Amino acid sequence: MEFEVASSGQKRPVKKWISMKYKLIRSMAHNWSHSFMSGMNYLDGGFVFEDVYQMARERRGEQVTINWIPATSEELFGFPPRVRNCVLAYRTGLAEYLRRHSIDVAALIEFRTEVYVAENFRMYVRAYVLDNRKKEHIAYVWN
Image (tube, rainbow, N blue to C red):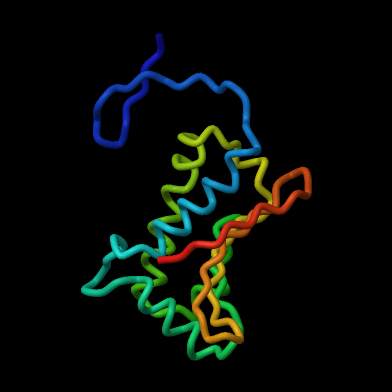
């Protein structure tokens, strides 16, 4: 059995790559976006979701888009520092998160979290993934 050293310094068994399961993509994207927008994501004295919701309200119908794959920096310039720092921190852990969910990063063409206010004034959080088969995986997240 092979072992790897985790970031905590502990040894753990290496998970052999079995096969990528496309059916896991939607739930992975939902969980990732839910974690990012959750009340557990507290940074620099405030909740990240409050800043993202405020940006969505100010944009009046235009969505706030956080691109995970491909990671782009253009949208970060319009984000408050708390959101920008959190996005950068989350991006560093994305590859490990995908590995733990048995999802090959090469299978994802696009992965993003979208937040917007709909015409009914309800706030929506949507996880969107386009895989290498050109299939869209969409999951709505409610907090």
